[in-house]
Length: 414
Image (cartoon, rainbow, N blue to C red; front, side, top):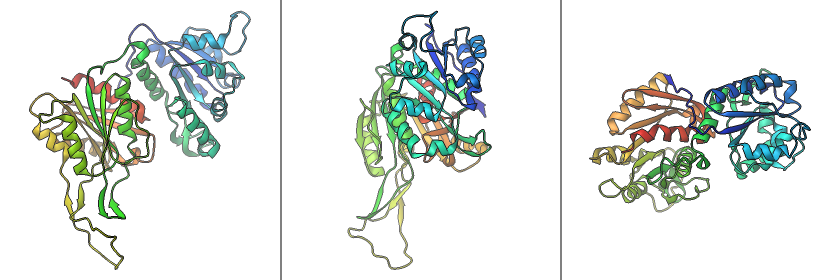
């Protein structure tokens, strides 16, 4: 399968303050710096004292062509360095971010230059954590992460893999290519950079599971968390779109600015789609069907709770294929139709299954992914499948993937 090439940013050149903490993974920050510079970004490195034990400052200076900052008060520079760096930064990225650094940020400590710079920043801050899996999963770390997310900081990784000790688990820093692409994607669509490429567009997104009742106490559903659909809605909003989010029951906050339409069943979603798209399907520019719509529903819903009587049979009937129905009804260029294909097959079979769905449903793009990558995580690995090509996007946060999906969608819009 094809891997997407790194995409550069447009001038004027943005500035990334690249913070480096004291982790064994610090050596990978050099690769991130190189990729950013190659894409046309000005990189200002800031290293903690512990980071200099892992990676030479001369390496980052040589790769970026800029002074490497480390001391809060450098006599030769004067002024309030942390304030100046925060003002210069289009984005701050901390690669790697250690457990101690996350703890310091969550509690507002500013006892070194990097921490003080992040606390001064009022724009995007992206963190690429790296630590032992036991540290990542510790309740204290998870509390700090929740606090930082609530404060608006963004995360790239960590991923599941082998860490320095040789053990395997979630805590390994994301690869430099994925981190650089996340940074570049954020820079390309930072409103402060004037990028509102979906302004004037109406994007309809479906998210989450549907629920098909069996009786008042039981129902059929699936494991969809809604995170991918909500990430897509959030990314579309950030790029200026008017967004209608049709969502099954999920435990996620509604994206600010979206028109949220809660639904329960597949037939509820069908009605909501008809209302959002209009009679001639011309009321939206794009429909992204990220929801996991139940294929079947019980033939009848029992009015009272079914009692246990040993083996039983539940008779099911098919739900309407919502996306295929829209593909068949569409007669003009609107809306662009994007479907999802969740499979449990190998990578090659994944693309083949997506192409079958692409033709069967008469849609423009299928986002293919595997259940083992998608469920119970904030990250995913997807393949964008068209009739002529298949583009693999590396394992990354669902927010990053949502932004890349929209990049791919833009040329398809009428």
